[in-house]
Image 1 (cartoon, helix red, strand yellow):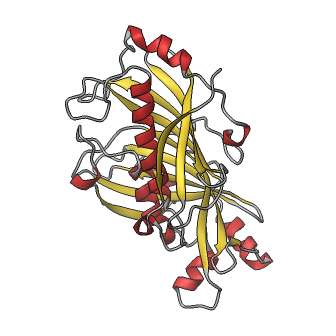
Image 2 (cartoon, rainbow, N blue to C red):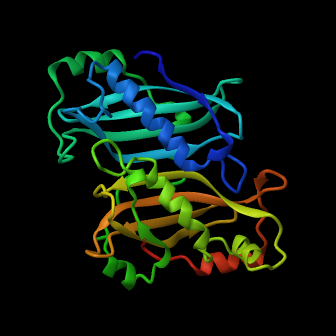
Length: 310
């Protein structure tokens, strides 16, 4: 095994922060995508994000842990390497760290395919890749392992009719725009989180204390913070495709809530991607997870959807 190599370095821009006052989750994934392209190049592949590329790397499953807040101006860097690979896919681990302390800010465990940019169909790695990938092979740090969820895809069929049958809550709806696409016309990876992040505040049953604040009730300055998530990509959207997000609570204890999101194509009912997130209410004044009273906890537990999976 080798040590991780540096793959990206930069900072948190103020305009990339959200209502919680810290780096929005989509930008973690945007920086990880840049790091992934640099890792590919280190492994001897041609630039994978250029419009004239003959091959690219397409994420299939992404497990992310958000380990420490990143506030405006914070300097950050990403290091990483390959965990393993087979004929046409690979497992990669990336770690984003605070530059000043070296403390992990986030980890990314990504299963990806070596694929044709025009069709997204996987095909075999070039011969030169195996030797280069072995030289870049690393171990997954303990803190990057799943903690509050499983990374296995669910067995339940995912569709609009299944969402209706489970009475999953509509939290988002819209269209993917040209500004969200990559050089090949597929949606960029960061919008797997971006579109859910834009919509989750509508999920009143999962965060009644935050919803009370939006409804004008006295409830303190509360937001919802994502601590961990796993995303399974079923298909990649193109510009102009529509989406609808249907969500349900999988479980809830006194600290965190596991929430499942199905991002669906309304015209066909088929899934674009599914996601399970581990989230918690956050006291934005004290910058820590909020205390949950018994009445709120009972309300949240009553909203759990038995058997829901990502």
